[in-house]
Length: 135
Image (cartoon, rainbow, N blue to C red; front, side, top):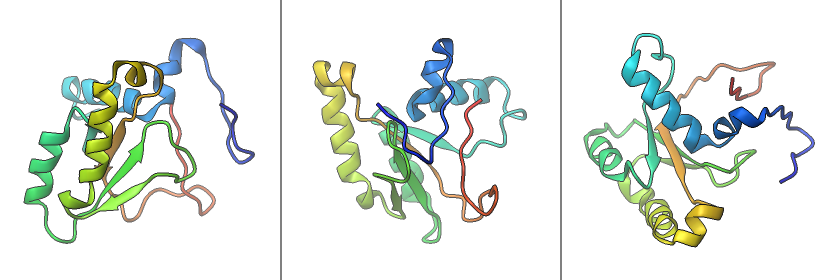
């Protein structure tokens, strides 16, 4: 997989699990459970397909102004991102992720997982641009 011209990548073999959004989110969730005050900077996060029921329950209680953002774990540069206000907006993503996880061959080689988070309307910008940093 090649990086796009606007991407900077520095990978250490021991930390490859943090290069995919779902794996990083799972690690952060575990740390958040152990040290909630330390990890309060991280928005509420669900990983699809495994957290689908919890996410659905959350979205059923949301106000009409709350938005979640779903990002494919292996995506980059905004490709495949979905903004949703209703569970119905995410149903096709959940079905796609579940189908992928039920196919042992596909789930091993190219899992179709999504990370879903509360959408931050005013994110921290660097030079006027959104960014992500996985340390």
